[in-house]
Image (cartoon, rainbow over all chains, first blue to last red):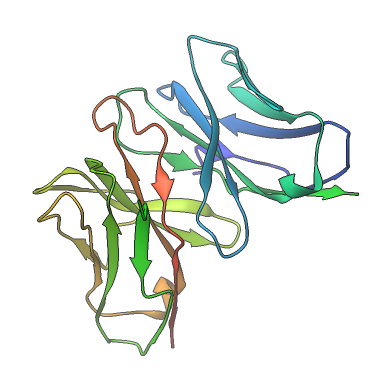
Length: 112
Length: 115
């Protein structure tokens, strides 16, 4: 049973436009959410996080939105750049927990 | 700082062989973890440690052992390799045990093939 789901295996976006990556979760105990970015043959790198006391967090071109009632979060990248092409993983944990649960990932391709 | 280092980068094993994947970090992080990445399944937690001498199981611990004798090192042992353990293995560390795993720093990965 996947507790964190990324239902879109891939997404293709034109350079300069907005990329929206989605993530759903089922475990009500999750209250801390993270996005990681991964290039081929490298380890994932942390991108942005949000706790359940917020519904939005911004860092430059990256914004994460959290809808607790729908158990849904999304990552917006504006504007998208070719260097953003990578696999994006959504992850969740409880705020004082020691385990991260990852989604299956979404491959983002930004076309120039 | 080298961050999180993993050796080897690639390994091919025969069924039944044993081996140890090495992981080291130089950031003095208390929390360390091992994940495996398989196609279509994201990263799954194998084992983790919140400090030297303390380890615990993750989501998929069977067939793997870990120990944490120092803050810096967190080796992962495969006792008797099976084809189902063919995967890419990532080690990660974080400064924040007990207050949420938070931001983790990942190593470059070890690609393991079991024939």
